[in-house]
Image (cartoon, rainbow, N blue to C red; front, top):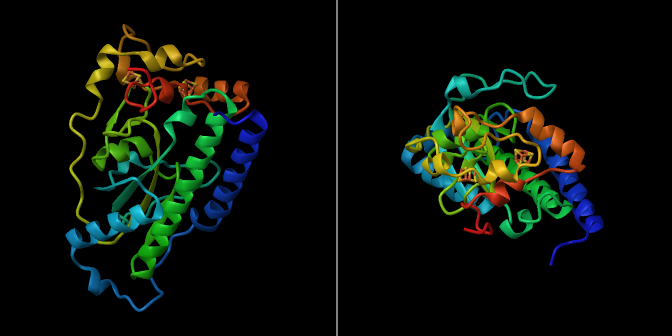
Length: 263
Ligand code: SF4
Ligand code: SF4
């Protein structure tokens, strides 16, 4: 049963408050390895390290984790009001997916779906900050981020976690777009995963359900030149979020790769 709007808005506010606490404490900070008994020399094996990092990320709540080298073209020169950047020595990105409840997302654009989005952000903050601190405890540098610092969707495709859909989101195997993405940049030696091949989801060439479900008219429909390669019109999307007085996940809910969508 869906939550009523008051419950949903209260849950959303609670989740955002937790996210803000974690984000303020961790997102801006490079964790310089220092504490604990561990030393970086004991963690020189990139294959073993990658397996360990994925185990720990899962325990922190990530449903899927991939690793890639940091392609400078993915980096943002500005993150909101901040001028943070990723130092070049942090040449590995650990990209984590946290899951959203497909049934709750299915209520979009109602407040219940916004609450699920907010819970997703809270889980992102926990995973990214927890993993960065873990890596620092082992003696390496680590910089956690939610949406900031780098483009999360291309980075996730670089890390082999899925393909990019017409709606501009990651489509992860078995999970579809019903995920949120966070990441940690580090200098820990880590074996990388193979990037997604192809990068774009081929099914999008014959589908435009997300475009038809978008109340912000932000996604190109079938037959539009450039089609699924155009990405979304971010300003139209955020305009709709404002009009909706909350977030929107219509495109996620409508996508046949989402568990709750009618196929
Ligand atoms: S989040 Fe909503 S407004 Fe934005 S692109 Fe998706 S369906 Fe359109
Ligand atoms: S709804 Fe269809 S076109 Fe849109 S991302 Fe999903 S599969 Fe691709």
